[in-house]
Image (cartoon, rainbow, N blue to C red; front, side, top):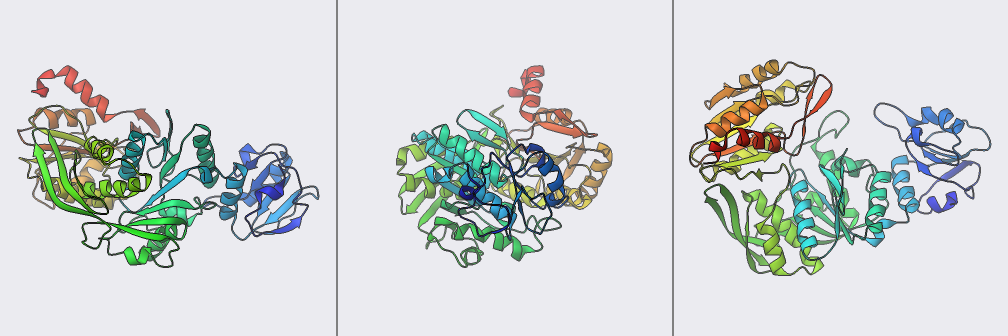
Length: 490
């Protein structure tokens, strides 16, 4: 293809050479350059790709896209832009033939709820016969193919590649998580979302190499609503007006607010043997009752968000109700049915904020006891250990402190840090370093009406020790425990 076709939506300067140059591949990773490649220099936090220009030219790159003046041989075309991340996104869209235009694109941003909501939307759409791809924190799903995710929102080139694969596989829609980093770094530039969704906003991802402050984090989230046709936002969020500053989309809302277009009414918590969930009535633009096998107020928001989206696809009311009745997202309040005597679940809550939200939600169900099992990662801030320990001891009746990705630290050193926080509140606790032993202890000692949550691992299927990732899936550990002790099921 000609270089000109890749630059069609960009403002740029030709420093050397010609835009009529024939090129072969578009690349942002210097290791993948081949003869005839266009190499886009991306400046990262560790290395500046402009430093690799001599290497990529030696490998046969015909074009380099830069943000600063460089010296290269005269037979290499040099294109200069003011933002190469934005340039990469637009060029990638063109390179893959603008696949997003052939899909209904749904982007979800917010601090919490993105992952669960994407799976609910995919489940409902697929139940109604609409083939739907998914891109998110856990994985990328294209038909029967699942690809482990590296980032919540992939780099723009990879994103457009996934879109192209989805089109080729016959997908009609794609639902994806859109992180603040993804918006800030232009990973989702180069196309317009059909639907943009805002779930909620709390301080997160603030610090070195992320967002300088909460205002910057909030502003980056709001960029989605300058890049979508229809914006669907949480009417109950105190930050909704900030999200809509400068918006260019049509606006719809959902929530408990009587002013929301789609409303949750008459919410009731359901707690039955081995099961906890919620039921409520949807009012406003739709009118029917739903019940969900996931607990808590936030599951109402997640499901309501999905309904707000699926309404635009003309999904049948009965299909929505049936899909919501069987929600299951790996590692997100994932209930593992073992015994009618107690409820066991897995969740990814791995910081104090998410753990507090989870435990507060579960306490509303008035369990006989609330049991929380968790550990903290090694070579990370000690403050997280103190905070999580205190939150669990304050809200749970029993805290089981164990190991979770100790990395290059000793598990007992991490546990001792957690206990500093645990001892600030008055909950009972035990320490069991080996995670399988800790899980067995929680199951063996479960009392009628208990709710037991295994926190921190969620969808993860490994334990990282001394630089090596060892396979470890809590679901498999539970199966092993039950095979060894079938009496625990009674």
